Length: 318
Image (tube, rainbow, N blue to C red; front, side, top):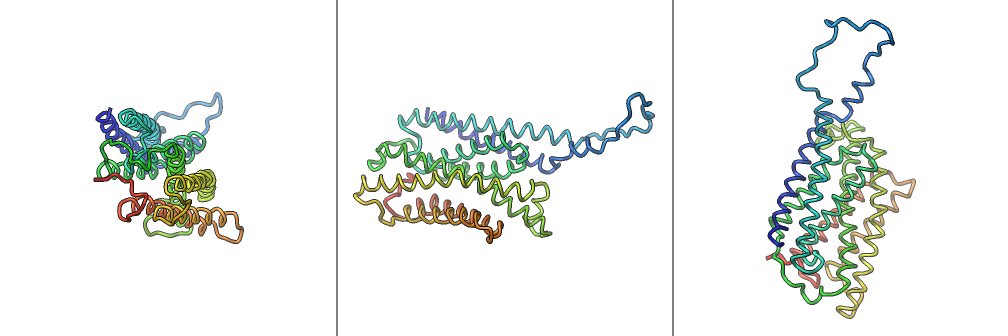
């Protein structure tokens, strides 16, 4: 089972990579080509003679609208395939370990990315017009899973005593759900800023990428909704962590590096939601705060686990 899990991870990364390339093709050709073509097509009244054959332009060898449609459908299918392989990777890891498969940093990133992929697919079903975001969501998934598999991989070992608790299923699960959802929220926030910069006439990279993004208002609204959903879950995770700390170490809070950065991320995300609800604060400023929140989450995940010694040093990386 452990070997199968490792193989499924490779296949999942490959599927997400192919999905990313398909999203890139769709993004490059433009998602509105077919709509524009249909809207501008000349209408012929019923019963009117057909135009002469010579007046009908020859179809191009490569129809951008058709390429866009095929790439879009392929991207969706490959994303779903990657998700299924990802689920299989995590399930077989858990079966091999005989426990929930998030007892170290490798497994945590694996599970958080699965939540991110799930959140993206749910968002895509509810808001198909946001499909151009798929390029950046799958890019984040490929990068994180690649780092996870190459640098953070850990063989299956028994849990350290401090983690052998039912709180692992509660606290860490909540942290995984929040982290994976924040991933999609970060992609939406970053593209909101890119689209806003493009609308303002900025020409330096990455602002030209906003040309084929949905409107800045639509991206900003979905950014807020994603963060409004994830923030209470992160709050619950922090509270559960404090309760678990009291049971394990005899105190609720000790300003351990992991506790400190979890709290910093919580404050930043709370600041984002507050700024978003304050009319006098520009939406761009609030969105930058959301991006800063993701930076704090990455410091909490990689910086604290790999470079800072503390009571939460459970990365398991050898």
